[in-house]
Length: 347
Image (cartoon, rainbow, N blue to C red):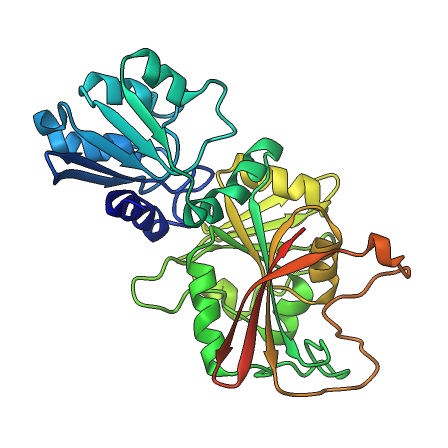
């Protein structure tokens, strides 16, 4: 792989989780063997990576090559099409790592018609960045990552509801990073009442996600720690038309039907592109049974809790046939100070 294409992908990886419903993209402009411009799409509504890189390069882009992690866009959104900018700056060659299957017209063909040499070089690292984005964009829902911390026998808590520190501090630090790369964290009132979490990203220069609370009844204890933090927004989804709050960072969304589909569609319309589900067994199971989950991350502590399984992280009302159960593939495993992290993708 070209080192310059690798740089573009690395730039995209650096901004993963901060571009809302837009894809993270990196771009590098090279002329006569020298990097003359670099760019990354920093946030939704901001300049795209190609534009950032070309603006930096200026006249030096003439006759050069631009390396992009994703096929340049062809549509007018909050910014003009990137293909127009590439043509305008006199680029002679475009190299990109992944085709954008959501484009209404082919960016590479537009560039070729303008006399520009275009080369598609598939890269697995870039595919990992965009496969879920393509699905989410087509369905107008955010990318969904479900996180579970549990014992070896799959318990999120004892039968009495004791759940604090099943996993270790290394896991907590890793979860902070997950929060940082997601636009929002979804939870329910059961977890709020039991664990009293804040759901912030306590890492250096960390981005705190929007805290999304699902509560059909609207029975919420506003004295909990989360509501004392006025920095990050809190969005509540409820069917209770009488639920109100006088705090500026709390947005109450009243839906006639608080189904996952309606909630996720609404989140996407509000610009939320990636969500992390950190919840108890009921909400976790609902997401795992749905078609919306893209990725599942399980942190296993070397403990066996036993009991009746009241807080088993996954349960269903009915016994499913083996052919009908949710199926995942393991993409990575790692050790976190004697705890095991398993990353899985929905098949």
